[in-house]
Length: 226
Image (tube, rainbow, N blue to C red):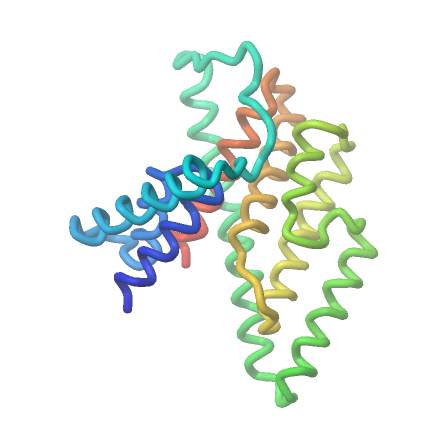
């Protein structure tokens, strides 16, 4: 059953995000955070690459995010290595806060002596209140918000910080209350908001590079902390 789950996670991640290598690693490390086994890593790669081929090559499906790499960006080690290391540490703290919030509400929800549908309704109510406070942009999976951050709109720093906190809290209420849905897309959104926040704070000339790195780093950190 664990091997089948690895294949399913790897295939979904590798095909949807058009990242066959990352999908194989991600699917395996969900179950083996400390020490990956070669056989399971091979299964993850095989499933992810096959799903990517079927999804993108045979069926001709487009990638999830419809934007190109930042024009003119070149990775300069002397300029970028220490910065991205610091970014990874900051994203790690954000993901740790996200985990504490998510599992904290799950623990609180499990101790409520209420019917499951009441618990889910309460989670939805709290999510709606959070959206009223932190703007409706935090609702849904967050994919549209990521595209707005990259392509369309320039949000003020205070609103980005509010949306970051709001998305973490809203996702905790939604997933922690037992509602259906995962945390992969919300995690990418939280990572994108974190990257946008950092890029504005340091006035980085290529914000998309930070947004992309933060999204992937938060998702990886999330799988490790869990």
